[in-house]
Length: 284
Image 1 (cartoon, rainbow, N blue to C red):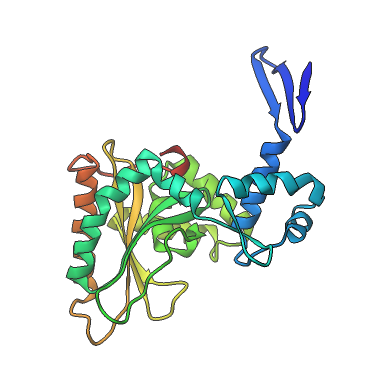
Image 2: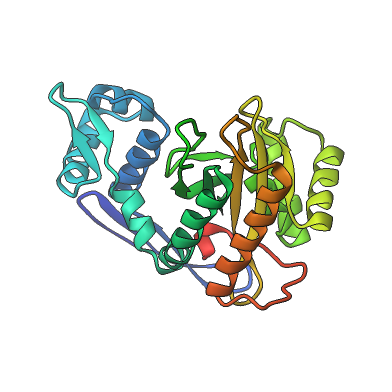
């Protein structure tokens, strides 16, 4: 049995092969709203309603009221040219989520001290599906600096942060994610090379390697752990050599380790966490 009202259709309760109840709900209005938000998030330019409808393969009639609702609730911003862009509301909601909020609160004063003691910018990253998400960024005090935009996300194996987080996943989950990345064509390396890279991170407890995205920059990335010893984030210093910088890579690595340990202790991590599993942002 199904009940439909306006844009909402609810499919009745069904049973699976084992005879257990299973609900299969379909909510078209919610699907349209999520489709719009996800489509807009993947684009840098402002879009008209016509462009949004064409991109989603839906008619303007289907999405018009949903766009108005999203605008009214503050998720979309309309420009004078009747184009739309995402607001920062989704980002703000994510940071209201207690685990992320606690992580940022614990890390911010420590990272401010780290940039002053290394002359380098740094950022905090969490795992989000097959990508990593930047949840905190603190700039170097020097006039020339390298930084990443807060809220940016990158392919997991394009960054040292992602490799550190990936290396801490349970073996089965790690293998599944590596297979997903390989299938997408975004890995930039073969399975054996990836396994060797992750194994080295496990052995050393960090990654220090030339950036795959920025020439001349060396990524220094270390794990941050929570009260059960799970790796919940990666602290990364994109080391940029310049005349005014007073510290070499080895000393910056030592400072980054100390900062990560301080943040981990603030999250309740045991002193000797050992080899730990990573936690994805969705389940944090």
